Amino acid sequence: MGSGHILVYAFDVFYEIYKTAGYSEREIPKLILQNNLYGLDIDDRATQLASFALIMKARHYNRRLFREIEREGLKLNLCSIQESNILENRHKEFLNNFKNGENINQLIDIFYNAKTYGSLIDVNKLNISIDDCEQLIRDIENYSEYTLLDLEVRENLLKIIPDLINQYRIMKNRFDVLITNPPYMGSNYMTD
Image 1 (cartoon, one colour):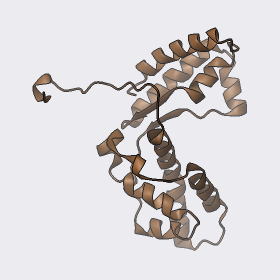
Image 2 (cartoon, one colour; image 1 turned 135 degrees about the vertical axis):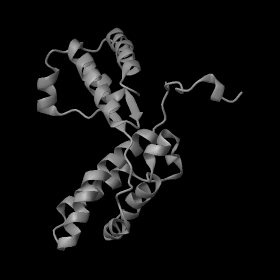
Image 3 (cartoon, one colour; image 1 turned 135 degrees about the horizontal axis):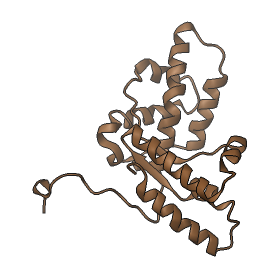
Image 4 (cartoon, helix red, strand yellow; image 1 turned 120 degrees about the vertical axis):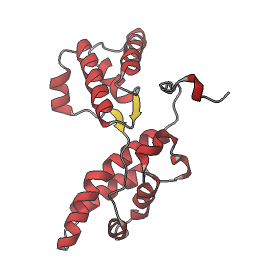
């Protein structure tokens, strides 16, 4: 998604579509952000810029957006791909104590060195329920029988796993339209 230029342009297109369909002009920006725009990047800063650009574009159309976000929250469908490299066998063993822990272990395996592979990672070979993964996070948060060593493992997992689930959710979706940035290399290096 880079810094979000294409997403901002698509926002305007979606806005007109929603308006033509008769939606309230005040609710359209939030609907677009939650339902229509998805983005991936390997650069964390690009994701921050794209998020900022989209929020500012949405606020242009709805001056009350910040208050609505503060009151109701907002989940953007943008993420920078995160790696599972800092998670070790002890994290995986800890997850095996929970129902559906093997699902998260599959995510840990597939997203090892994820910044190198980016969107080339084939998540379609996984059959993991996102609801089960999110329930597992709640189970880990509510579990109280930790040893001192488990606390560090728990904190690492709660910091990384939600990002892995989010990028899995975005990468496994099927989209009607997909727009990508062209490769940034000279034509000398491209194959026929």
